[in-house]
Length: 299
Image (tube, rainbow, N blue to C red; front, side):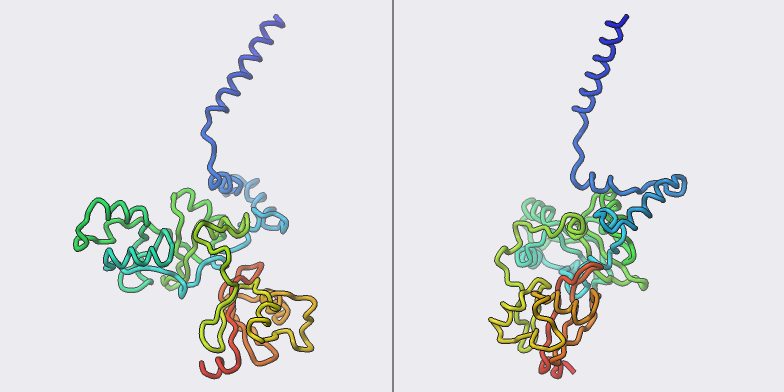
């Protein structure tokens, strides 16, 4: 009898191992979405409690996906690269080539009337199958865009993107206009940190001169290196403790006394000002420095 039970147990064990080995492995995307406690929250109070616990856990990276809103990570409307629905085949190819982007929103008239997005792969397949440039119509190869409110959490959008099998969404404001754009890469970076792909420039400068008296910089721009190259010492002020900060991000945090929000203007004691171009709930990412002369010229 004992031998029979042992044989049965071994058979069941082998069967479980076989079934497990035949299961299709989950993608990285699916695994992340699977961590999120979504489902029928109305009928599963335990999941609602789990959701609140994750939000309250400041050490939980998954909790961060639920606390941070789409608005915090989206690309501002002014920086969205999009194309018109009447764009020519040649111009569309040039846009893909010059931006190194693989997906471009397509609009009718203005960006506030989006139609969908065009994928570079679809464009190439269509171009190779039809050599007649005059018959090309970008609307024939559009894919569906997601439209989401700015208040939606990153975690909810991540799960929605998985369900819809899409990697791009437009953020729509309360009046129905486009407020920003967010990609799956923006969402994943909230969990694993910045992702550099083959198009990212490894030696790209942290700042550039946009025009006389105006600089565009990342928050990690070194104050010392900026001073060495431009002669501008942004820490030469009694109220600024130069030993405590090394970067532009640290400087604006010290001046504001908190993490400033996107669009905020942070004044500098020397009459300069920082405009926050990109930021989320935890940190500043990109900013613009205007010197006094540039501020006066803009008035």
